[in-house]
Length: 127
Image (tube, rainbow, N blue to C red; front, top):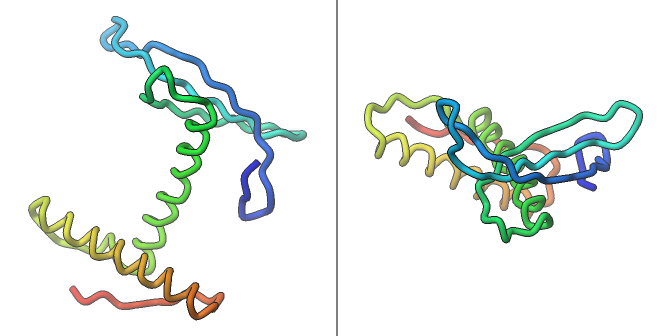
């Protein structure tokens, strides 16, 4: 069970070992993680993981849940801090801009918690 924006989401998980192919030939063995929501209209989600064969299902589930938090962080950083407004030509400049925006997001998130405000804190990043 996980907590969504509309309340708790109750899911059932399963995993299968599958072999990926490359040009019609077997290439690599990976985990296929399958999530199904319970209820009248079940929805399915699929994830591929290259975790080792000794990885427990509980560990795979915990790590797959982190994906949402990472995507949420990127979305908030793009919309609130201008992470998507950069004009750089080389990787070090782009990397520096992304790291700076993510650190600013982390700082504002902690500031928001400290001040116990429920409104979003906005900040303009100088180019």
